[in-house]
Image 1 (tube, rainbow, N blue to C red):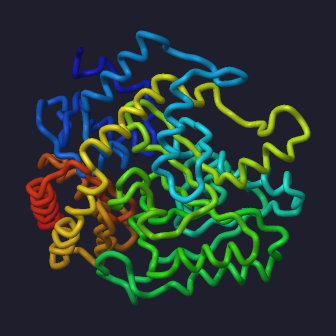
Image 2: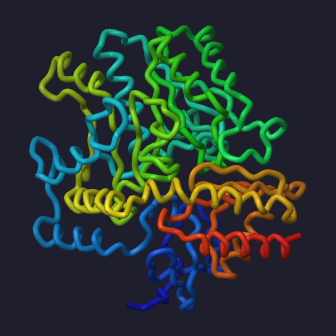
Image 3: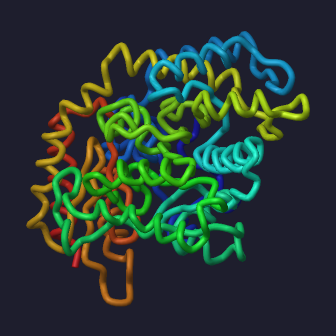
Amino acid sequence: MSTTPATLENFWMPFTPNRAFKAKPKLLVSAKDMHYTDSDGRQILDATSGLWCVNAGHGRAKITEAIQKQAAVMDFAPTFNMAHPLAFEFAHKLAGILPGDLKKVFYTNSGSESADTALKIALAYQRNRGHASKTRLIGRERAYHGVGFGGISVGGIVRNRMYFGSLLTGVDHLPHTHDPKLNAFSKGIPEHGADLADNLERLVALHDASTIAAVIVEPVAGSTGVLVPPKGYLQRLRALCDKHDILLIFDEVITGFGRLGAAFGADYFGVTPDIICMAKGITNAAVPMGAVAVSNRIYDTFMQTADVPIELFHGYTYSGHPLACAAGIATLEVYEEEALFKRANEIAPYWQEAMHSLRDAPHVIDIRNLGLIGGIELESRPGATTARALEVFDRCFDKGLLIRVTGDIIAMSPPLILEKAHIDQMVETIRAALKETT
């Protein structure tokens, strides 16, 4: 297979400055364990698990073999009015690690689809149980819930929203939880800001609880720069949702499958939502897949109140795709056999100290971490937000390290198989890149 494409002209790349990339392309041609190999044959240490998704590391033989075996047996089967065994087997295995009574699983193909599916389920659930006035959705500033119209409506990233019209109506937002004045350079969960959850009371007073269907938040906001919730914040939000009969949705596309050292962020924080969105690490990114888990109470309401044979008018051609289910089953087995969630939890303290060792590096104005997530915020250049971080990104890549930047924040989420030596290399490379950046 050629490592150099005939042309770069036809692929419109997502979330990428296409003109800049095509002037200086970065092409990855293979991957194994903690490393990519680029088209020049260089080893690139992966500090981002691809895109927050390759939690078990690259090129896992067990997952590859499961996909190959299933492709040879049956490449596709529809799940509209029929199904295949792996879809049920994988749902059962997922139910075994999901928190609380979230035991019913609806398959999607991505985190974006999971977010939109969760919102639709929430709205339909309220209608089915006789609360049709509950149609309002509450998101949060600086949140990312994918790129579907539902997700960008409840999301809070300006450029994801500003180009696409009025979006969904009946949406409001809680304030974000980032407070650098009180919580800068916090190690782990910040101390200050639990009271920010009380802004839900303000929205209830404005709209009335009888109109609000659901609140959706990420346990840790990853894509917007690693915003860790303050101590007690999620617990307070859960209590307020219970008080006002509002569903609580956790978007765990990033925090699910060991990223915080537990199966889900819900487990880490000890807060069980009504609905969980999943994707990314669900198949170790070997085959695109997502899922939404709902409580038995929500599922039973659909089964008991439906006035037509089809209880939920929603789904995707590739829901529960056989290859994705095979990959998902194998992925869960790898997580369990290698105790990767426990391993992430055990190495997290070393990760934390290594991240915060960069506090004295040039341009650094804040560092945030939780589990195996790290965010290093840089001072922005006047009138040139993101420019400094993009230069650091390029320098790190040239030095053999893949990081991710969002605004002027370096965001990292390495595979759970990393060793201390990998962490040391990441920190040393970032420090060197920062020293070379003005």
